[in-house]
Image (cartoon, rainbow, N blue to C red; front, side, top):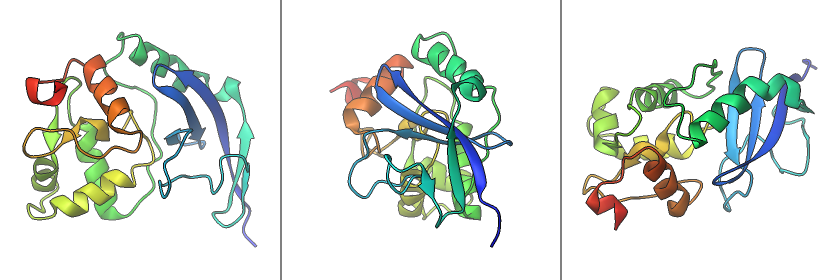
Length: 181
């Protein structure tokens, strides 16, 4: 049986509620809303269970190892940081990775539509698949799926809920008249 991978973890309190973070030796693997919606993706099978043998992962609480991530997130929520500099360890299908990289290219304070992301990954008709890739994004906020809006300019689905999406866009100064309504 292969050795389980150990991820360092911590849970922090933020302006939008508790956040769970997990990192490998290569970078941040997960940033999740601690209060998950039913059916929402998670690296953890159960937030109260720090073992997940099915995924070959073990979790080790380590605020010290996670401090660089925490520092940048605190700066982000204080409005002092517009880009994250820590490494990411993105894990997904080729299509998901392409979508998540396209999200990383959306500048702070700007938004894109699902159709914009579909065009950016070379699949102009795959806006629904882009939506599903966003839904599976394991690193909320840092991989900014909150910056993706409907083609009509309105807010639409977000793992943390629309109120959290609105707060993040407000923090970034990205709320237009349509989005603010």
